[in-house]
Image 1 (cartoon, rainbow, N blue to C red):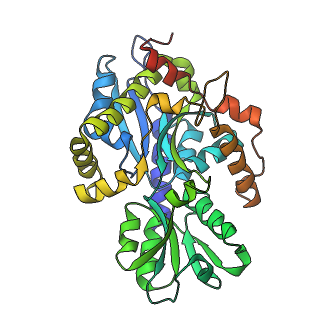
Image 2: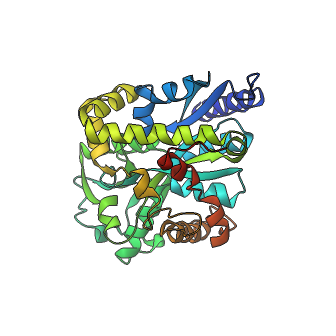
Length: 343
């Protein structure tokens, strides 16, 4: 039934993409924004109607489309059914490898305590080394999957010493409650459900200290970018404004995210404080995107993730560094910072 529902949603999106209409001035009547259910700048921008206000002056409607995974967002991108979408950056590597017509334009957040490896209580698991012989679930090809494999590697555990199961976050919670799995690497909000009767062994914040950084990013349809570059700048400004509100008025941002996701403010706060929100200047620094002329450290991270995904047989082509350099496009952030239009 879940698979049937998923296919109905995707087919609906494909049909929606086919009927995209434009105004007499050539601008689209609607901007379609894909999002995952995470308390971040996009959630805040939506709930506080920052997107709506940004595009109202162009008489453009905003449609928010929720996805359970970056995999679903990539399918929608492949059909031209969405213009922007957030996802874990591992799925952006898959998008590039598969030749989906998109570019990477924004980092939503650096993952920290909002993603973690949790183990069942009373399973005699006190450290990562105790996972040998255990069953662990995570959504494959996700940032959690990458973090889990890297965690095992750091502790000298090979994949044949554990049983890894590919599950979406909802199924992980169900399997956890049944006692079918010993551990899971997952993210909020389902992470909190696991923590209710589980122990946290390691978080993505811990891994970041070991040089293993994971982030959520935003991709944009290249055709959209080429046709409407100014709208891409407006989109980036809206996300930046949401981040600024969180910095200056955290309670406003937290309450808006909670309302959007139908969770408590306490849960939203835990999610948001478990990540690092980058400013536009942070994003185009050498630590992350850098600039078109001088790519930052994120290029190397992206390449290494491609190697990982090829080893996991999730992609058949490891994107080259030249391909990655073209894929990561910080120009809209630069223009947003300059306060210029982009014609």
